[in-house]
Length: 112
Image (cartoon, rainbow, N blue to C red; front, side):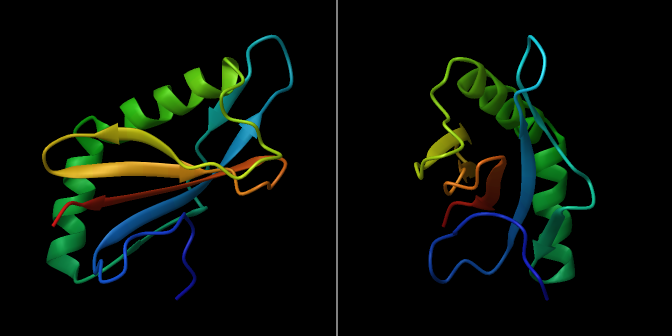
């Protein structure tokens, strides 16, 4: 299976990832979530729980944080740097542009 996203810790069995677009056209740069550039890996029940957690607020908060960091030039599409976009007691959302010159690779998983 093809996986969109960024690295996750070794041994992580359930995770979600996407390849978002860093759009710098216009006055307000933003991070665009592309729905057909995402994947979720793991057992069906585990992926349902992870998906429910992401959709209860962490995913929106992470993409808002990514947009904020991109607009403030903290995220540079020509560099490789990991960013924690969201973290709570259950899980974490991380990202890295991987010097892609236009994409932001994002992954989410539960903490062990």
